[in-house]
Image 1 (tube, one colour):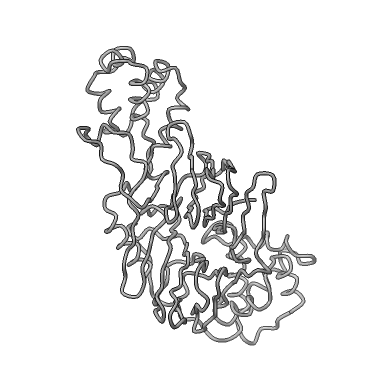
Image 2 (cartoon, one colour):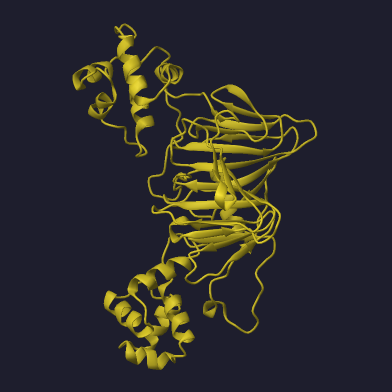
Length: 439
């Protein structure tokens, strides 16, 4: 179903760049025009043929030499670093806003000569049993994550949700009181302002059990690259039903690793324990047969060092994967407040789901603002639920983008960004990021 959702989104949105590339040429052109330099004169000063400069400025030429960039930067009074960073701001894959109305058309100006558009028209994609409003861009790269707002009418369900690879899926119920999450043959209740996290490769579903009220939830995950040669197999694994300690240790090693698909080394696992050495951990990791003698004190030592509870370990040992869903309730959600700046973030990511995805509620008091700059290759998604907000990403080229209720933006947080509430009333938004927001 995830593949169907993503493909329908790409079809509904239309053409979108499949890869990232700083629009350095557009920056060169803008700075040249701002300085009042004619194109032939500029081409002569940087020792380029006019047709070559035109290709560069219109971003038709995807690569140029470092020497050409250095000459252009000197002629414009900036550095090559400035050109690249400003070009990243203009990359549509790094700045993707969805608003309630389409951009204003500028009559008489060809699209290729315009600056990048500031927003796109918001989409509401209908499916048979639900409606989807995407927040993230229709990309499918390892840097990006998928984030959408899903509206589920009363007594309707989303079935057959499954990813072809083990990746976390996190949901946050913002409206509704009687949602049911199914995973591994079990059903779990979810109520308003509650979040859940599960392994997306385990088949799961979402059902609105309410008789007359729709449910609205945010859904976020990392989608695999379905177009990459080789693809992924959906064939279910045949898993024996007996106690298999070796299988559970393998799942534990994957769970403790920060690198998807690469378990932590056994030597590292031994270092996490209180009393076990490398050879003892190896022996435990080889206990496959039901007749094997299990030293539970060693298991407890491993679990304590790895931060895994026994219930999950036993699920892995018997079933090969946990069908237990992680929940974030009022008791387990972290509340971080920026008291001096009028900004509050209510962390909603369920514990135990790793530190790759983050979601939470953001509140900004009237006439307040907050600026951030990530030092990692992080993408953020923001959906405004109430009030007004101005979002400035980067700031070297683009100005503030006004957002109203029901509008969103998805952007590269390493460019730096400012969130400002321009009015006296409080603004409330859903905030998500990948990797997780460190606060």
